[in-house]
Length: 174
Image 1: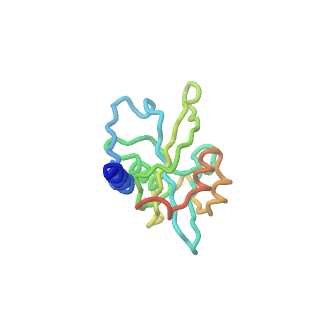
Image 2: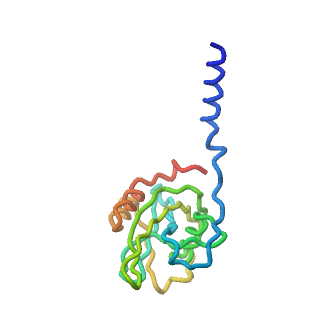
Image 3: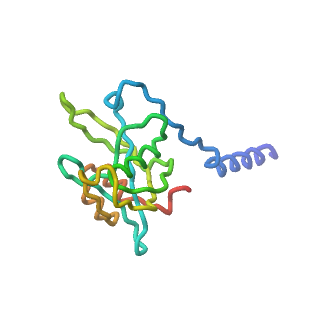
């Protein structure tokens, strides 16, 4: 009988401490084949708290001017979260802390020379601590801060709408 209790104690200890042992993301090592070989992208859900309200920043796409979140291809020797943070700066002029926690996944198509390429996009939270006045794509895109519900309504992809609408920064680990 004592062994059963001991096993339960050990199991409880393992479960309670499992989060401490979760592996950190490793930088990716990409082949030299180019961006089109990879059918995955990493996106940044850029957020801040203003007037006690969570806000997220959306940017416009280059061609169709739809509201999207910053996203891009995997980058050699960068973790997915760091690649998402790089896109946040390049596309929206935002810097902050990117967490190695995937909030969710959404799918979309990217037009190619021949047909459309299916893309799966992993979303990472970036808590914004600096809004730059100068950034690489400032002449190609607009950026704007929205409440979670308004941002979700502006987005096209149903899965991304759900990720944004249900985002709760106080529930993500630090």
